[in-house]
Amino acid sequence: MKSLIAAAVLATATLGSSAVFAADISHTTQALPVIDNSANFGSSFAQNNQNNTFMDKFSFSVTRVAHDFDAIVTSFTRNATTGMDVTGLSLFSNNGTLITTGFQESTGATDIWSLRADSLGLGNYYLQVSGKMVSGTAGSFGGTVMLAPVPEPETYGMMLAGLGVVGFLARRRKAAKQA
Image (cartoon, rainbow, N blue to C red; front, side):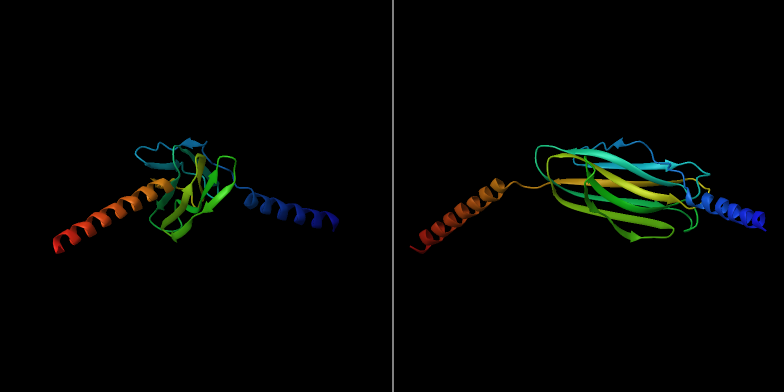
């Protein structure tokens, strides 16, 4: 009787252990080639990776002035049971501090995630795309980022001063016409 119970426990543990351990198929961190404040990125995964997971990282730097950051990532297949599922999109500082997480816009055959971060300071960052292979077929995702410089406070001051001068000149011109 003891050997029957031991065999049942061993069989249950063996079945459970194969489902628990998924392989990590993440790629090494890739540099995000930002040109004119935008960049495209993505990764592809080979077939026969069902249930394996990934967390691909794309690094970039903010130099000179603070920037607003926007990103979108998409993966699509014929249906929700093939290829991959993108399960997360996050922005981190270079030391691993989470800055913000993205929002899932669509799921199923087409996965769409977007992310926004305001006024990223000078420094190094990385975008992380997480997911899982849902079938034995190959899969891939692609995305785009945009960086928009945030005007410095001095710029707003100069703009307001310029508007004040234009207003003063317009008022002076109006007064001269009435005289």
